[in-house]
Image 1: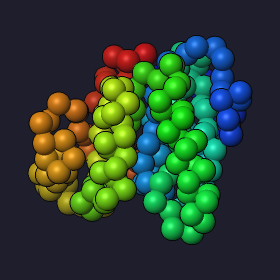
Image 2: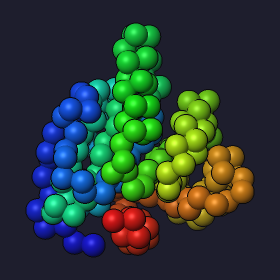
Image 3: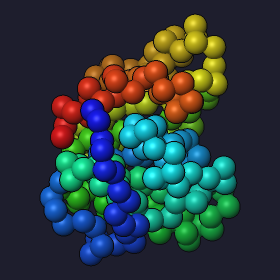
Length: 193
């Protein structure tokens, strides 16, 4: 899919600020610094639409990126960032939960995990959250450029077995550096928009 005029629309801190056009929303979920913003930039061939940072925990609001008035990429705050106070973590948690369970425009959740590590307790908790929402999901094993290309397929299968042993959720590799997995991801996104 070719996106010609993507734009950042709003950083929302509550439901009143969410866009009201009724466009499908493709939601990005994952721990802090897993590469959600880089994913957006890679998929639309832009360097800086979604602000990236080497410092985890930068995204504290829900960021809506309008893709040619066809759909939104929605970047949720990352979880598991230890420098946030317990109170901030609770607020962000409630905020995410409220969005995931009440937002009718959500068409697909893309759950990004780091291909180099086994799913953490927080990853498993988030996965359970996603499953309980009943929404369609795609698991992306991100940062596939950080391991040998010969190990990517096996590692993705291992991660799927750990998170989704029944194998009913598509699990794909992804890399913002290599840009070789985009077409497969677009094929899935297009089914939901």
